[in-house]
Structures are given as structure tokens and as C-alpha cells.
Amino acid sequence: MRFKVEISEDAIFDHSVIVADHTKEDFPNPGDAGLEIDFSGRAARCIRVTATRLWERTKDYIFALSELQVFAAGTNVAREGTVTAEDSIEEGRWSKKNLVDGYSSRGQVSDTLPTATELARRKSITAKLTALTAQRDEMFEALLSPSLKTELAAVKVRQAEVERELAALPAVQMVYAAAHEFKPEGSFLPPDGLRPVHLLARGDVKRPGDAVSPGALPTVPGPEWKCEPADARDEGARRVALARWITDPRNMLTRRSMVNRLWQYHFGRGLVETPNDFGHMGALPTHPELLDWLAYWFLEHGESFKQLHRLLVTSATYRQSSANDLEAARIDGENRFLWRMNRTRLDAECIRDSMLSISGRLDLHMEGLATGSFTSRTTTRRFTTTHGSMWTVRRPAAGVSTGISFGACPILSWIAWMWPIRRS
Image 1 (cartoon, rainbow, N blue to C red):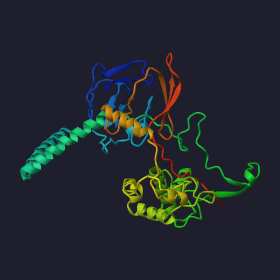
Image 2: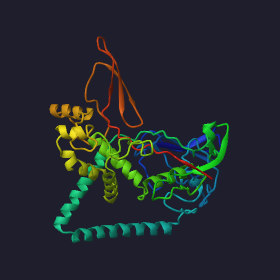
Image 3: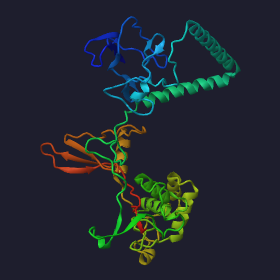
């Protein structure tokens, strides 16, 4: 980082004097040691610190001052003084008022200069501490067996490798999200409480009925359907109450929906053919006992999708032949009762991965940014949906037809949960 320190008789700094100039080259971060600047014999009423280059921290840049002290006649005259700044974090211990409150980032600091005796004592204690630390390290090394020393060295090497891999990952990008609690800025103001919701007769907003409050489905056995948040005025607390109802271990509707989705993914059709509708308008399950058993099995095994996938693909039903049987087809032509395995289409992911694997271009590394697997002479624009799938609209070059291709991102949509209401 680079900075300079000025003093002046006025707050405008029309006639200022630079007492420390570190703008020409990088200044090492002093950490908690502090930096002392001597400008004895000069009178001033104001002091200004200007950063010309910020310190590069992990993923961002900062210039952090934990405490500013100005000593005159052995006393800190800057304590509780007025502080102004063109830019400040104003969060936690890093607001402007904390710059002169007598506390550093580690603890309270003295408002008087230490005497020569105190300085000598500090130096002696620091030397003793350094010697004792070295002695402790030697004793620790002597107690370790050769095998443990080798293992410890290997762990340190692996730790360094992991840290390098983490440092090589792309920087975290800014995420835009909706929020109801934020600092007012111009005409953008947070809402003043929650808007009351009324029961609407035939959906007519001009005829509001009784006020309603959050609730879930009373027909679902198990968890309490009255979702009463800790703070009825907090919109986020309502969502938390709903999330807890959905994920309650006693709520088997959630588990039935999840296992039905995975069954549909592997077999082409769910045990309930209408995965988005488990209600009166939806289809009845073809195997209700199996659906219940899978839901409880899923819950008892820690709700592990990996184990559920393994259970389904290693089952006799999944591994049976897809060959036709005329007698069975006459009874159940749609194969709703799974007397054979359904034929499934080869999806885009399998085609893409097979082509890349055969050509030796399949990248098996985890994480990181997506890469363009195929090249094209067309101009491409990419759009990412909220589900993560990618649509690529291609502008054709001369003599090339226009088309739309879809990225290889399977979307396994889950049950569309609603926020039901009840009468007050």
C-alpha cells in the first residue's frame, strides 16, 4: 500500500505540511505493530491520512486504520476527536468513530506514552517470550517419532498444494438479490412493515375480506400446519417458518415428492404420473406402498440422493429387460406397473460426453468456469436461466442456417410449493 500523512492548522488543509510520504513505493503492512511518525516542534490542529494505493487483501482492496493517536506532552490529544472520511466501511469496529476511541483491532491502547523503564521491560519480556517459544518448539520436535514427523511434513505439503489450488480458483462474482432490509439510498427505501393480506372474494382486489396470516397445508399429517414465525413483522421469518415446515422430518409429503422425482428421472414416469400435483386433480400412485417405503427409506438414510440413486439403479426393476411381452402388453399396454423396463431416450448430456470421451477431450476436473467444448464460425450470445441451463442463440455466418441450441444442464424441478393462507 501507499499513503501520505499531512498536518495543518485548518480543516481545509489549504496550507498543509507532509510529515510522512510513502507514495513513491509500496509500504509493507505493519500489521498490529503500529507506525510511529515524529513531527515534534510543529504546531497543527488537524491531521490527514491519504491512501494513494490500497492494500490487496483476499478478493478485495482495503486501507484499514484501527486507531489514530496524536501525543502532545505525553498525552493522546486525538482521543474522541472529530473524524471525517471520504469513504468508510462503517461496519463493526471499522467505523469513523472507532478511529479515536482508544481501542485497536486487538484491544484497548494506552493514552499516555510509555516511559523508558516500561519500554525496557517490554523489550526484555519480548526476548524471553521468543526464547521460550523456540525452546517449546525444540521440545515438541524431540517428542515426535520419525514416522509422525514424516506424516506431519506430508500434511504441510498437501496443505500448501490445497492453498495454491484455492488461490487459482476464479474470484467470486457479485450476486444481485432482492432484500427488504437495506440502507436507504435516494428514492430506494425499505418497506415500512409488511403489507396486510386479505382474503379476496373471487379474486377481486377491490373487495378485500378477512385478514389472513401465514400457514401451510392442514391436510398434511405430522408437522404443525400453523406456521407462526418468531417475529410476525419480519418477512424473512415467515420464509424460515415455511422452510422448517417443508423440511420437518415428520413431513413425508416432501420426501414422497423427492423420491417420486428421482423415480421419474430413472424410469421415465413417476410412481405418481403428475409430479407437480399430488392433490385431488393429480393422478393416483400406481404403487402407493412402494412410494411410502421409499420416502421412509430416504429419510432414514440421511436423505442422501447418492444412496437413493444407487438403490434405484441397482434394483431388479431398473435392471430388467425392455423386451416386449405380448401377454403383458395386452393387460398393461402403457407399462404403468413396470412389467418391463421403459426405453429411454439418449439425452444431450450422454451424447456430448460420449463424443468428448471418444475424442479424448473430456475434462474430468471438478469446479471452475465452463469451457467452450466446440468451436463455431457463428457469433454466439449466451443467456443463463435461473435454473442454470444455458441457451445459446447463434447468429449465422454466410451460408449457415439459423438455429437455437440448448446447453447440457438437466433441470430436475422440484414440487412447486405454495404459501397457503388461513383465516385469522
